[in-house]
Length: 331
Image (cartoon, rainbow, N blue to C red; front, side):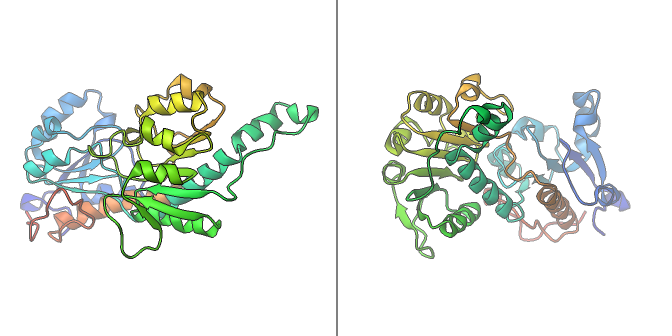
């Protein structure tokens, strides 16, 4: 039976932060859940229950690193709430035989919707127009003409599940799409660029959808932004670490790019005042997947991964860095 531990006892799970799920009572019924964020003394809680924890429901800004895993010697599975799992040290997990899962697919369409909404808001200056009306300035004259999507070419950095969903939406707007990634994908007709700088030079909008890894850290740097040019627009719905935030601030301030729409930042939730002060930005508080529908689906997938693993059926959505044993043991 799912959630059963030795002698019929329930498996103990450590949950690091709140997460939406359609049926939290079912999660509580399946496992003994310890909520780290509610503990008056989190360190004391870890000392008490750490040796018995076999599963981690991980989310929020809590890093899941080797030091934490060492305090959970019975840990078998880290079920990450989110498709991005940069807060989890997957190398440390793999070294300890711990499997990591994430929540792909269930948030793909939501994030792609947000990317297009952010693009439209940035190009047509929708937040600025909203403020213009609310402040009564329309009574004194018309809002200035904005730029347009017409005639623009979109460059997508990272043509994975979300990148492809973004590309489909861009096509529906009549926009030409190109992409950059580690490899050319033979099953897509979009133009491929082996060099990010060359793609940035050829497109008018750069949409960042690539995962955060050591290889992608600050991949969008001053050289890429310079290639994008003074009419170029940067949209980031991936992770703040993929973009050199200081280079973006300088490029925006010096008009070396036209505008930026950002849903993610280097040090969330702290956003540089210099970015906030700029009028050629649209800034969102990391809400790419933040709808009730999608967050509940993500939470359910976290629970489903835990239930499947502890029922001996293996993980549903393991990440590639942590190889899965041929058959997960039921204990």
